[in-house]
Image (cartoon, rainbow, N blue to C red; front, side, top):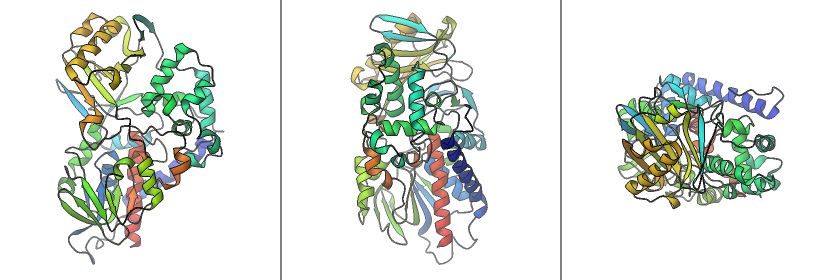
Length: 488
């Protein structure tokens, strides 16, 4: 865990809020529902809660409902699988590689607690040894000591600014008028960063926000840093950072385990096309498998996906405007090159590669805990890599050979996952919030609309956009609907 000064008022405030949430989450298991609530005065075709989305947020909410004694619910998932933006790929020999979200780190206690409850183990990301930086035909090895090589003084400047930007409500920052006009690129340009150091910054921002610094809103990025105890290095590094720890069995295992207990309460390949009567006592959800009627609805999906549904009556204009404006142009493409063993470790390399103006944003060692096989995962630029997987494999193996040695030319297998093409339900992986967005639309993010409760990682008070944020939002949504049902 990172060290936090006890004088950091911003963090202490967050901590007090977290303690309240933790207490409330515990209460979910003890509030319960009156034994007759699920039956009394209800027709058989109406459930207490419908949950839209079977990612971490939706499944966490379902798990909390059940633990509170509520069995009158259903989970509706458009895909033919669970896990949302987490997905495991079977690389053979009983091993997996993650092609979606995969890491947790200090301060991400909600997802860590969930993993312990589900008996899912963790292990550290591998970064021991030298990172390779490629530029044209040039090649440099350097020990970044578990960081992305960002200038610490510049990072400290971002950390200081983040203290004035609440993670859960960046639009309430006292400096919102000043900060929400700028992109991260605008701010970095004022810091007189050396050209050779821009590569690390570009990769760091692109990995966190899905776009280059020029398109990432400074206010939003500062709110992300605020989640990390106002410490930039705790957000965008590996050691003692948000990329520090992986799950044994891959991140999707959390959703798979939660889903296994749901039985017929989980409906896959069941997209919701239309929601009517959200302002009434009973809401009707029109799906590809028929209608579902519910007294409360948890919308555990990406805000931009909400806009693809029809709502009758139309949603309030502020909420509708937020959904229309939400950026959905960062689908991401992640690859996995599999080798018989992690040969690069024998050479004192950690398998991490940065490339200047090349197709690789960041490649890294994603091998299983014991190094039984070698896996290099990479975030790549679609514009610079062929869309055909076989052609892409040839391009990447040549780059890996330049960085790691000729052994890289003979992989055992290759997997290429382009989230923009995989399915119609993952229109973006991360939310590249631009300048001006939060000051215009922030107030509409969380307030429920009638019986619709907005959930999903983007709505989290801290660690929004991360797996931890998804779990937190699921806890919050379950508690909200349980209290609403009790009042009713």
